[in-house]
Image (cartoon, rainbow, N blue to C red; front, side):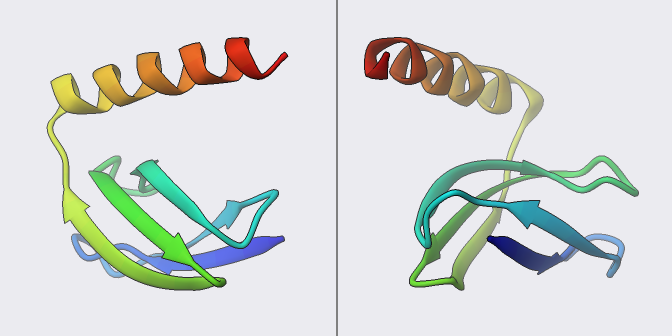
Length: 71
């Protein structure tokens, strides 16, 4: 499923591919490279908060660990 997200920093619309209708985690704008934490529920964007590079890296590590344990 493809989710459209408009970047709050630059206003460019980007696509976000999801396997579920719900997601909470990091998102990076393809144009300006700004980082955000997004929360999507029921195919609707509920929140989009700015994110630091350090926090983005930490969230990526957590997601990687979760993916390993799912296997």
